[in-house]
Image (tube, rainbow, N blue to C red):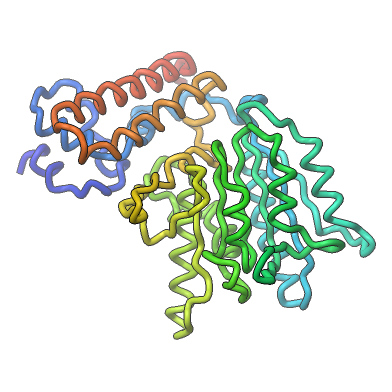
Length: 373
């Protein structure tokens, strides 16, 4: 069986790292149109694993992000209530702190100091007020704790006044930098609706305010940040979308194994429409099911949020990261047009974008590689 025939039998969702070795070079020199189309059907991040295999990550790359793109993570641990919940919230916070350290992210933690008179509501408001409102650096806000919903307003339970979805949305009004807001509490869906906007990824542990039982999603999400099994596209790093999908799957499995009714259904929103998409609507990293009115798909922007970047990711300058992200978004949008475009035109446009991506990574390899020792 020829290698081209083998490639033809691979699923479109086959991890790119598995097929990168030996096939990438054939793409450059083989004029067979059908083979090119097979290759181009794979997820755009095939370029990164391929270049890693060819030595990009082994030539003395930078060990930290450029200062101007360094991620800031604000961890908010809510009022624990019972001791059992408090220990669980603390464990989640520890996992997040570990991931932040691995990813060289700036970290602000609210809710773990021993001062019982602390007003965490004011501390969070002050922390957000002090953050830059513009720029390329991502800001992640993670809410770990309990949530409530009275039929009108959802709140996150804090030491001191509770935080409502409306209040948090108001505090974020002036932000234009990339934002990720992850609410792992019960009754968190209204936060997604209120906070959704362009240039944001919003994740909620529930699909409505009426899902008021304690949620397992947050624990699984914190574990997924450093779990290699969550790396669906095998690019050596775990995106926000991949962590969401892993945590959602594990949450559902928990209820099935326990023989219990599922009481939490997580959502992700990154297209600004405030609706959210559940994990079961994804095949691999691509949303394959749409709302009945044809609303835009979620998931593309969330793929570009990574708390712990790979070595090859760290090789990119702030300017190169911006160029790469723009090209990847263009590739993902192009894939969504496949059913509406003539086949030849679709693949021609896709090939142009992927070649630009390959050129960007190749230039990075040339810039950052030194003599082999």
